[in-house]
Picture 1 (tube, helix red, strand yellow):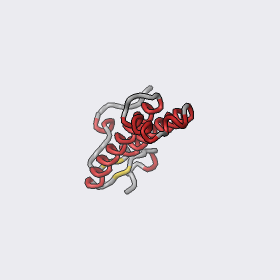
Picture 2: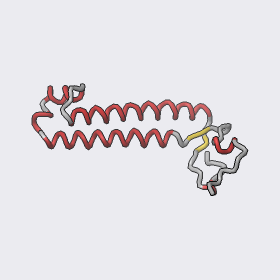
Picture 3: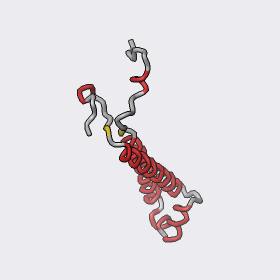
Picture 4: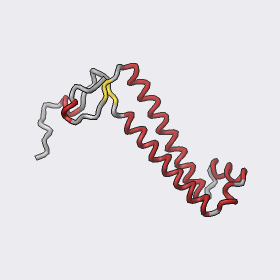
Amino acid sequence: MADDNEGSGSREIVVPLRAYKAITVFSTLLAIVAVILGFGFLDAATGGAGPLSVLFETIGLADAGGSAFALVSALVGIGFIALGAGIYVLGTRFRTEGMGKAQDDSGEDSSNE
């Protein structure tokens, strides 16, 4: 399960194709859901007319906290967006045995001198 280039600092993890497909699908799905939730919380913090804002007003959360609710909602939103980005980045670390980097396929030297 370890990478062939352990000494070179590569951060990719080689997994079977079936696991790669599952990781790719579910990490992308979770990342999308987290980012959408994050923007929903940011919309609720600004008092927009989004579904979370309406839900929070209906149950009385938006009126009770005032600016404290807006701050917490904005921080939760930013946290969800960061979580979605982190999930996506970690999901892209996986590859299968036959996959290589685009730099490995080219015949050019990749040094940036």
